[in-house]
Amino acid sequence: QVQLVESGGGLVQAGGSLRLSCATSGSISSFTTMGWYRQAPGKQRELVASITSGGSINYGDSVKGRFTISRDNAKNTMFLQMNSLKPDDTAVYYCKAVIWRLGLVDYWGQGTQVTVSS
Image (cartoon, rainbow, N blue to C red):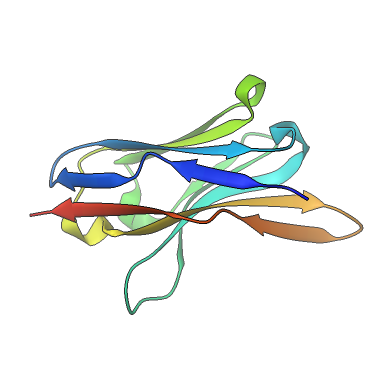
């Protein structure tokens, strides 16, 4: 069983920065893909950024140029650096990992709240 634990959320003013972390219980190099998703009240969960085991990165359109996804294989941790935050970035941010176990299996963290005040 893979466990993912997010941290780093909080309250920040518009224009500020936060860095989210996602610590994994397993070897991060074993994951096919890892990513950050977010869900605001009344909205569907959406992709923020993802990174494959090969290092390919994808960003949601609304965060391109402001957010950066990265990972530290030695620490089994994934990060999301969020700069120039906007009130629209307010949401619960979730870490997701996809691993091959006789098929692709998704694992999710419990989420961390990010609130951006205007």
